[in-house]
Image 1 (tube, rainbow, N blue to C red):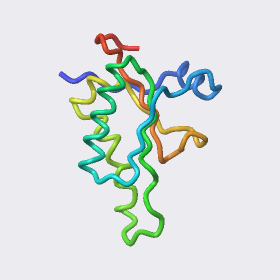
Image 2: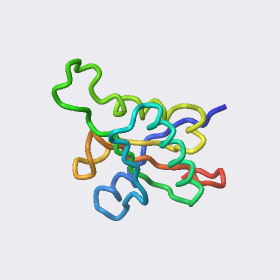
Image 3: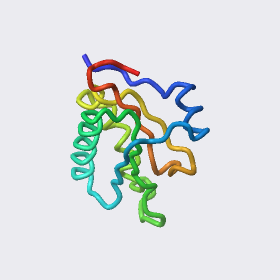
Amino acid sequence: MAKPLVPLDVKTRRALARGRLRPEASLDLHGLRQAEAHAALVRFLQGAQGRGVRLVTIVTGKGRPGEADPFERGVLRRSVPHWLALPALRAIVLGWTEAAPHRGGAGALLVRLRAGSGRDA
């Protein structure tokens, strides 16, 4: 059974807002197709967890302004949260939230990773 995702706790959000906690790594998915982005995300999260990283930024971008179909704008922005909730990544991902405006806002996610030994935060 896949572990549930949990929202970032108040203590973590407060530490991020005050600058006492910063993401330890980031992945920029700009310019990648969905399949490439998904594979890069999985590799990045597995590697980060393996190195003991607990908080990362995933930059999805906000989509291209002026695209013909507004519903197709920001495909990665819409897809990444769904990917983070898949059973394979729930073993790695503890929870996520949209980044603060100064860290990318709606075009980035802050992702909290589970401890590599199977313990949670």
